[in-house]
Every structure is written in C-alpha cells, then in structure tokens.
Length: 225
Length: 225
DNA sequence: TAGATTGTTAATCGATTAACAATC
DNA sequence: TAGATTGTTAATCGATTAACAATC
Image (cartoon, rainbow over the protein chains, first blue to last red):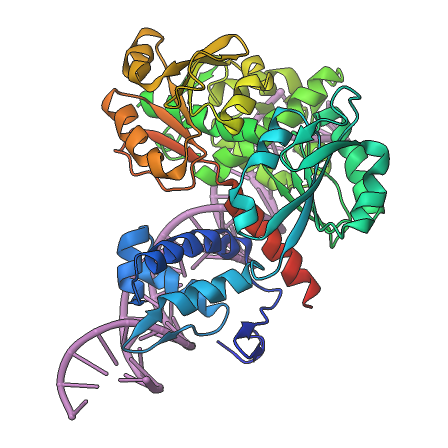
C-alpha cells in the first residue's frame, strides 16, 4: 500500500482514511462476529486461509480487506485473534459509546428498545418518542415514551449520536428534517422512504419490505428454471 | 442483448433467467417504490432521464437494469409508469401471494406480525411459534402463538413459503435445520448467525447489529478527517 | 419528417482473485 | 535455516457509465 493511500497509524489506533469502500465496511461486522466467536472459543491465532474456510470468503479478500487499515498480521504466523478483534472493533467505532433515541414507539420501536444486544456493543438507548398521546408516558424498558415536543431538547441534553427512525413513512421526512436541524450525526432509518440529508449526516436504511421482496424474487426465479 | 442471455418473454410475463446479478435485484424494490409513487400521482410516462433525476442513479443504469428483463420502454416515448410498475412487481414475485410463519414470538417477532405493509404486498402471516410456554396461546394480531411442536405440521397444512426467524442466535441453526428438513423455500433470518442451508433454499439476512455497526463506522470515519 | 429516447454495444471504473516476493 | 503466511502488486472479472445507432 502506498504511503499516501494508507493513513498514519497512531499507537494501534488505525486512523483510517476516507477511501475505504462501503463493500469493505459492509464485511467488517461479519469479520468481527467470527473473530469474537473464535476468541470466546479460546483460539489464539488464525491464518487468512483458515478464516477463509470458516467464513466462506477467499483468503485473498480477507488479507486485502484487513490491509485497507494497515497490517494486522505477521508473516509466517497469521493473525492474533484477540488483537484483530479489538482492532476491527475500534475501526467500527465500538470502543466508544453511542447514545441513541428512538422516534416512533410503535411495535418496531418498542422491539428495538427492548433488544439487549445493542447495549452490549455500546449502543445505549437514551429515549423514545411518539406523537400519539396514548403512548406518551408508557414505560418501555427503562425509558418512558416522551412527547415529540421534547425531541430537540433531549437530543442536546443527552448528547445523542444516532436517531432510530421507526415512524410511518408519511412523517419520516419531516422528522428527519428536525433531526438534521438540531445537528444529529446519524439516522438509522426504518421508514420506507429515502431520506435526503446534507453531507456529513449518515443514513443507514433498513428497508424490511425491500428485503422481503428480494427474497420473493429469489424464490420465484429459482422455481422458474 | 443476445438471444441466449435474454430469456423468452411469454405474454408479458418476463421469464427471467438465472443470470441476473444480486446488485440488480437489490435495486428493483426501490424502482418499484418510486414507480408506485409516480403511479399514485397519476404520472403516465417517464423517461430514464427523469427517473434518474428523481432517484439519483444514472439513466444509463436504469436502462441497463430494465433491459436485463427485456425491453419495457419505447424509443422516443420512455416508459409507461403503470406497465413498468406491474412488470417489476411481477419480476419480484409480488403478483403471487406468499405465506409466512414467524418463529420466535419475542418483541421483534410480534412487531413483524403487526406490521401491516407486508400483507399489502402479498406477504401473508399464517402463524407464529415459540418455545416459551408463557407466550403460547397469546394472541398476536389475528394469530395465536403456537408451540414449536406444531411447526412442521403447520408448514405443510398452510403451504408456507417463507419462515421468519426471530429466535435467539443460539437456537437459530437448529430451527433452520428443521425448516429445511420439512422443505421450506426461504428463510428471512433476523438471528445474528449465518445459516448454512442447501442450494435452492433462499436465505435473506437482516443483521440489525451489523447495520448499526456500519453506521457507527461511518460516523467515526467522518469525524476523524 | 424531426425530435426524443430507448436498447445495446463499447469504454471505464472498481472490486475480487491470483500470484509471489518479503519476512517472520 | 526452512516453512508458513502475510502484505502487496498484477491479472481478472464484473458492474457501471458513456456513447450512439435503432426506432418510435
């Protein structure tokens, strides 16, 4: 890797550049998951070859992926599982805590609020909001559903990084605008619309219906052979 | 397109071949969504150019994508919105009904059971299962949570296409094996593990934690500039 | 007919895989 | 040292974009 596409590595913290493709990023959580399992099983080191067999991706891709962030391995040895796990966690920003609020306390919003695995990785739910007066005041796990009027204030008070958008598609764009206006960094969007946000605000879409449609396609395309 | 990469088109039903890349398939639901909106607004025809402006993808890609399934447009005219909408729906298999069961009646399973938009597109929930005796018998929308013992019987009786897997990661692999054994066609997997199924069984993963991790990466990579 | 816009081929770009020299 | 395995460059493959002839 040339000196200018690779960014400086400061004391083990890979200060990765802007040039990493989303294809690579998309694979990091899966590496992280497998490495976590290996670590739990007490495996100390692993080669790209062995990880390749386990994960069903080429060893070449594994090495290429890791090298985007500087070398984590050692020739003739492979990769230290714990070290690699830690590094990928750091790259993914899992060494820092994130504060989230959920907007939309319907079924999905409540389900996400109750899902414990997020907290284990540092994603802390700090509030849940709804316009429906019938829901306001209701307890959801450790939180109380609050009025949408309090949205901006709470975002500032509680240093919220990420807004989880589980409102109906009709209100999503309006809510997203309010979020952007009060300086949110990221939106995890479950509403079935595309959000248009200024550069610097991250949007990650979870379009469940789209996902189901892909499944539907793959069912029908296979039987038609 | 050469005669042998393009499959026969029988009476408007595009019998698409196996050769369509998942990149293309992944974009179809979004086209479908935009075309549905245009249709609802009463727009009769649209050019790849205009759709390009709307959807923020290149006109070239739009034409290329549609041409994977044979020509839906007309030179000098563009695409008929309603026709294209119908065709893409058909390609995605939305002209047929799908029968689903949910396995795991926890928060997420219940949230998905209550989500109305799936039915509108022909995804009909026909059952919900759990091992937890405390949940069995409970009403979820029009369904009653049933024991896992009834799983295989219900799949056969109700002609289930798709199993929605919302069980903890520890039990997911075991349940998936049972599903495969009794001939399920497709698994919509929300459990945080990779399922290993035989060819011909479709798996669509929704790894929420992975999605959140990507968001986390994109937050931290931007501030580090 | 002239203008518009597709279908389709060719050019470019990016991502994946293969190969191998560097090195532990 | 010899063997193993990475880091990295080069080759391949696939996907996207550009261009334009076909045609409505």
